[in-house]
Length: 471
Image 1 (cartoon, rainbow, N blue to C red):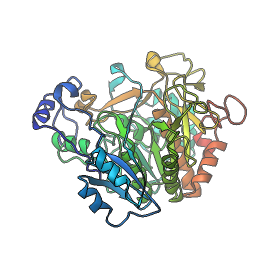
Image 2 (image 1 turned 180 degrees about the vertical axis):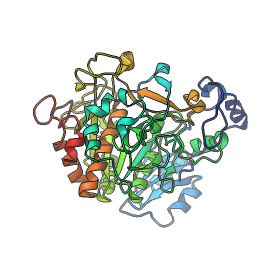
Image 3 (image 1 turned 135 degrees about the vertical axis):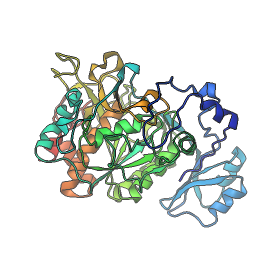
Image 4 (image 1 turned 90 degrees about the horizontal axis):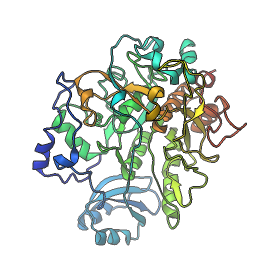
């Protein structure tokens, strides 16, 4: 587990207490409060300036590595036999000395990438619980879920395809509110883990007794409930698939690359059948050949463990085929299913039905060589009728009103598209087992062809179809 240095003053801890609730395992019934102002409270996002990714020559962790790091004033946060470690506490000279060790292939300063979904205060609503996991269409707010109908999830459910507890989706994200009604009982806490020490500290301070994986942001809970939900309030693609929470992003919505790599390897080594990564990020290719190769080797390791990896394309509206020296860290790896976003074009009421749910979302990244399939990601905030709706974490410090009851949240982005595909992939795995290459082929071949015949730069092989994938 991560031990990233927190570096907080106790006065700052006391200051943030003004802005957040302390609660136990359940939502409090206190009045809503304003979102916490971390800057005013004295908290700053953890500094990654002394944290490094270390790549070894060959497999395994060299003997004496931890001792060498300690002598240089650092700590080993994470290491893995694939040939990587994350260390912190090193100054520039220490990092240089470590990089000079004969067993080190490369050393790079860690960097973080921010989540960028779209939402606003008008997309948070109180909800009721009346549905059933045996009939996802009975979820109390199912009428709003144009997205589930768009991918023919309702047809898959009608055929009895509700998911299996024997299949597991790892959600690499900001954590999961595992007590939210749509997620209660769906999350395997024994395999869930946090790689964000700053969040661990805040969880122990404001939500004592909660597992560190609980979601202090909201993003991970929303993503998780889209892939698998008890369907009491809103349906997920599946209703009986098991989830693992892997916290690799913090309360600031920031995702350090070191945490993401550690989380991916944890999921692969702990039996996850699918990993959903609604995350962005990229770095320059020039002069970074070893690191690019290493990232590929990590993803290939996870694939060879039998784990299907689904990633979001990103919300920058850029052509990933012509992005200069920018390396789309996850979509460019050979072992992933990269997902772009679609959005409803028009409808006859606020919640649908929609005349065309296959319009390409203008914010989504694209590229003929990058995009494998598309899935519903929702319209932009300026046209909020087409949001993707899912649960709001009852431990969110970013949307504190969600602590005061059971709320749902509307959001848009390729982050919202990716878990649709992860859910469909989990259904395919029920049929064919842990065969990532074959799972990817079936997801692509069963998609509804949109745009240019064959592979399209915006839709890939098409918009994912749950019923088609399990037929």
